Image (cartoon, rainbow, N blue to C red; front, side, top):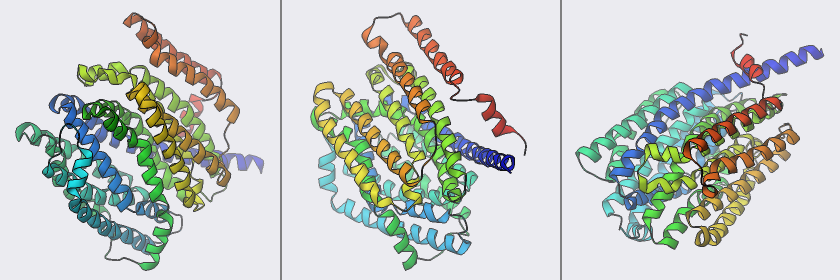
Length: 496
């Protein structure tokens, strides 16, 4: 009997891991093809746009994220939670998904009206040495509206586990959008307006394809019962979403206000953009893991399986962070212009912040137990920490102070969320071993990322020194039995 239980647990873990690798891998490929191509545009952005224009794009991006956080009502969080639950019928999926979509259309329409009414005040607040044109602001407003609806449909594809449809629509939207940006910028000379105009043309076309894939799920229906259920789950997430914006974007606002320069914002945002390389992978696997968790959370061995996957995440995540952080300068050298090279000191900190935020993948307890009301308190606290640290550190350390403030507040937020989630839905993992791994990772991270800031060293010697550190850490993980590559390979690729 014990042997049978052991085999079942191993088969269950293998199935979950295989599903995660398969779907997460597909999401990763799609996102790398889309956002990765976007990263290839960075040389174009850095040369075509002035630093001030790049700063304007960053500030309008913050405004768009703020609008989406509030006027989406975070309703997609509830839609994803309930349409993917095991045992839900097609009719229930239709009612939940349709209610969420039409409600989103209504709330984003209200956002458009308010944003247009307050355009003068918003433009004045966001501008600095270069005033944002009214036409640019209006285009960005419309682009936010369209992308909000696109995202709402994408959430349904993702949580219905229509992985191929989701990946295809995201890829087409990104690649066609990029192609049109290049045409409008280089041929039509539309400057930063090209970014928003391209989105307004391409995104509605791809939405038609999304609706085709969701033709059995989107109907003309808004249900009072469904809306009440979705709002009850999602509304507490609005303050949390706003606090997350504080975590992610307050630094830009402080930099703009304290340096009086959108150019400085542009340099800082350029460094932040490269952290999206790691974000792409983490968000891809989050896209795959969340529906699996909601579907299987009540099964007996799911928590043990997630604990094992968390251990793998720590190993792979820390290794990937070292690889990216060690070669920050080289990344900027290849993809940008010399006036952005100073951002290399910021990039390791951003990479570390992203891998810490990945802990959220393994903090599902508040969602599973419908305790989302606790989210605002945790994230708002972290947001307050972020504001205080930005205020204190930017005058002393400049852009580096802003990056450190973000790192500390992201750490506070995700550690608290993980602890609370462990109380509600505990995931067993080797705590002592994990602490030892992190105690080795952190010194290696600091040495490999910043040794050249304190010691003059030949570049070739420095390059090979970093390579040695990387292989030393991988050797440590294997010798310490924190990862077993052959076991992982066998579980993923073995036949049923």
